[in-house]
Each structure stands twice: as C-alpha cells, then as structure tokens.
Image (cartoon, rainbow, N blue to C red; front, top):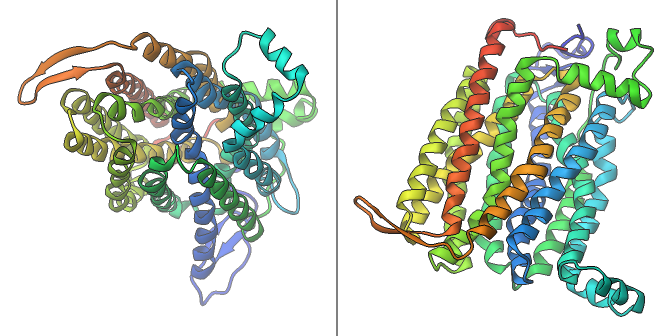
Length: 485
C-alpha cells in the first residue's frame, strides 16, 4: 500500500502556527498567499472554461449552426479530447518527478497555447474568408458535403483550444490535493467556487448579452487574462517532494514504462474497486448535466421571448445567491464529508428542476428558477470535486480522475452529447399547451425539455452517490477509510 502523504514534513518554527501537507509547511501568511495565487488561477480558469459552453453556442447559432453541430463542437469535441488526452497526461503527471513538481510543468507549457487559440476563435469568419481565397481550398470544399465553412473553422479552432485546455482542466484540480492542507480542503474548494461564481456573474451579466456584438473583445480579453493569470500562478505556487512514483505492483512488473505495461497498470488500479466505479458514475452525470445546460440559454430566448441581454442579467444573480452558501457548504464538506452533502444537494437540485419545468412562464418565474437551480448546481460541482479529493488515492489522483474522465467522455461524446442535439433537432417546432394548477396554461416547447433531461441525469448521479457511500463505509468510513489501489 502506498503512503497517503509524501515523506515527513519539514520542521518549522515553534512560535508560529504551521500547516502542513507532505513536505510543504505554511504559516498563516504563506497559506493566505497560496490561496491568493490558486484563486487567481480559478477566476481566469472559470472565465476561460465557461466561455465556449456559454458564449460559443450563441455565436454559432448566429452563423446558422444546427443544434447537432453546436452539440458536437461544444460537447463532443471536449469529451473526445477528455478521453484521449486526459488519461495520458494524468498518468504521466502522477509519476513525474522534477524540480518544479509534477503538476506545474504541464500547466506552464499549456497555458500560452490556450490563450493563443482562444484569442483566434472569434476571427473564424476572417480566417474562413482568407482560406477560401485559395482555389485548392474552394474546390475541396465544394467536393465535400459538410457544414458551412465558417462553422467548420469554428470547429477546428475549438479542437485546437480544447486540446491544450484539457491539459490544464485536468492537472489544475490535481494540484489542490498536493499543495492545500487537508483540513482546509473543503473550505478552500468553497472559496474556489465563490471566486468562480464571481467570474460566472461577470460572464452572464455583462458578456452574454454582448456575445453577438463584441465577440472579439470577449474572447481576446479572456485569452490575455487566462494566459497571464496562469503563468503567474505557476511562478508563485510551489510543490513539495513526493515519494517514489512506482507501487510495489509496478516494481514487480518491471516498472511503469511501456505502453502495454502502463495500460495494464492503469486499468488494474483504476477499474478494480467498486467504490471508484460508483464515484465515476456520480461525477460523470454532473458533468453530463453541465454539457446539457448549454442548451438552456435557448429556452428563455426562444420560448419565453426574452432578449438575450435580459437572460444574461437575470441568470447572473444566481451567482450572488450561491456566494453566501459556499463557505458553509465547505464547512459541511469538511465536517460531514462529500457523499452525504452531495446527496442532499442532488435532491434539492432535482426538486428545483421539476419546479422549473412546470412553473416557468415569464421573466419573474424564470428568475426564481435560475436562483434555485443556479444555487444548487454550484453546490453539486463543489461536492463532486471534494468527492474525488476524498475518495481517490492521493498519489494516484490524476490517474483515477482521468479514468473517471475516460468513462465520462465516452458516454458524453458517444451518447449524451449527440443524443441531446438530436432530441432538440427532432423537437424543432414542437408545441403543446399544458394546464398547470395555480399557474394556468404552460407552453411546452422543445427547450423546456432540457429540465427533464437534467432531472434524469441528476437522478442517476444520486444513485451513484448512494452506492459509493455504501462501499466507502465497507472500506472504513469516516474514521478509517483506506483508498484502494
């Protein structure tokens, strides 16, 4: 069995309170500076991470993309790269030993490319026009029965962006377990979500309404902020020393090198324990819901006749409602654990979705719906992040997270993403009037069914959470849990 923490902590002055994680030692000031740099990375990461699923669908819709094409570009491409890139990077990152640590090198080298391709995305129409000047490109285009040229260019830029973004999106979260003392992890993650919510508020309140008029400024500004912010974080956050990377199983097999041997070790360590399988299901359905939520922006705009600017401003207030709840939730996660907390949040989220399906008929009820669902979903994102930190073995955090991502990506890319796009394309033009008590006539259009899809996904996540809790108790529970490996 691998030790749960790195080698013995360094000595520290006895007259100051000290906090340790592995070989890292922090004073209160040092811990505060660590939180500052990680949270700076959080703000720019959340802006960058939500730009494509929130803003890009609106831009693509303006260029005539179908719901199926939007689902492929926004959801399926990201899920496919999650399947291909995340396992390799995570496996290598867990086993990397360098003077800069095992996570920082990946974050440092990927960040400039993310900024580059994010900044190029709004120039897809200009890039398309330049490419079509070439006769060979024009003739190739005519011979291929594909989508419109500009939509394809957006897709190519999304591929390039997602390729590097996937490195940061996975490695960044593994860093927390390595550098944040465990007794502060829940509260740190709550601060992480608070700052992320502030970034989401900025995106929804100011940027979403300008998606079609200030596309270049939004993407280029976010690209510059993300590039500079992440590079600064990489320079000022330090990792400690780690024990040897190989497990006894790997040493007996002759090391972890070689694709076949590495794949065998990966599968054996990642997919043998039932507690991991149920955790994978619980987290996968939350991320699937995040993908499906990309279609929710069309519900108020097309079925409630609300201007996009109004939709963005009303949606943004959920970020403020969530903020005072975040730190108490972090305390609850530290005290009660993520399994119990996540189950309660899922029940509340499902109830809010059901109410939204039946009762939203205009701006006021849409605001109430947004406040309810928009408060519970950040709680779920925080809880599932903490779930991975607590359930997975710390020295294989990256590998197990990527194993989760592989299953998640297969299901989202091959099933949920395309099926969701197909569903809303098939429901195009559908309309039915439902008479709801105390509300009156409720028009059921295609995008109202986004709430039903989210209810199904959340219910599956609840099943995974309860089953993971059962196996977690068998492995020692709150006092004696030992992560399998």
